[in-house]
Amino acid sequence: MTTFPMRRQRPLDPPDEFGVLREQGSVHRMTYPDGHEGWLVTGYGAARAILADNRFSNRMEFQHQAIPARAAIAEQFKKQMPESKPQPGMFLRMDPPEHTRFRKLLTGQFTVRRMKGLEPRIAEITEERLDAMTAPADLVKDFALPIPSLVICELLGVPYEDRETFQRDSATLLTLDGDVDSLIAAYQDLAGYLYGLIAKKRAQPDEALLSGLLDLEDDELLGVAFLLLIAGHETTANMLGLGTFALLTNPGQLALMRDDPSAVDNGVEELLRYLTIIHAGPSRAALEDVEIEGHQIKAGETVTLSLPAANRDPAHFEAPDRLDLTRATTGHLTFGHGIHQCLGQQLARIEMRIAFPALLRRFPGLRLACAPSEVPMRSDMAIYGVHRLPVTW
Image 1 (cartoon, rainbow, N blue to C red):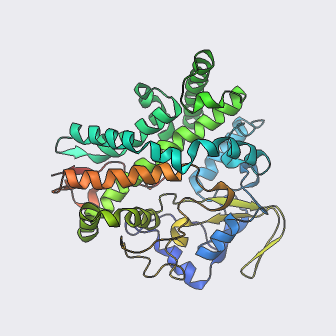
Image 2: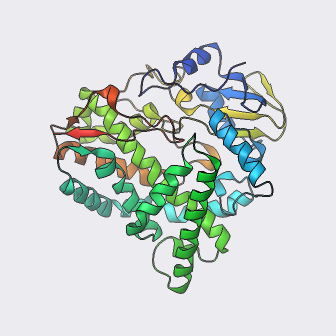
């Protein structure tokens, strides 16, 4: 049986083992670090089918961790906090009907129309960050992280001056090899901050998203705020950083993104597919026996889906290991699929469609300020990307 492969041979490609496994089939027996015998999915069709199948649960208490460091942390956490329960409001880890209640409540806040209404402000924020950049720069600190952080702060009603708190705590919570005491401390710190913010919203509501959810209980609103704040800045920030790295090492594709406005929409989708920054998961647990592509998955077994492998499946994408901003990249799974498909995907798309061309046009001579091999990759984080991206122009 296989174990979950993590070591990347090249920074912009998933581990080679995924491709080897996918050639043998889409679904594979996998041994988890705690000894559980479950499954690994590397094929596009099987991954998409499981994400859409309500016979698979997303509840954390049913699942096993595929990554050894995270499995060890989960075991320590159970010993230290054996009576802990899932945080109310963490709808990402809920099944219907609980998930449906929160999803319906939030869907109206993230409509395509509302997100498009944010475009002028996102463009303004982008230009402000570009105006402030001086060479040499760390593109992550100076551009990729501030843009989505400021956007999600304004959307939710979180003071941007508090960003050091939530950026530090969210980074700790997303580490794959942190210790359990640090993770608990980061969770408690961020929860305490958000509880204080919720109290301020109840005393003096504003027009931002969190104030529109004050009918929820405090614990539920805390869970919602946790998810939206962390996902709202970490994912897009890493796509902007890693995407720029990918373009700087593919100058022909960079020129398309910079010079051809008609290539931007497809280009963003292609970068999402090609890079697939959720490099470890998601996972699901079978609620009953389910047959997937001839394999009998038993009730209670965990299935880990490799979205980077699925998004590089040659059965669905032609020449999938080539970055091609001109291709019509339809149906990639980077935002998931089914009822848990990313709520903020339209916001992320808009941020990238504005930020990438603006950066490349402002600094047409943009280039790495170090060798590509010296760029520190986020292999130690749940969301892949670059820790820093030294650039000059």
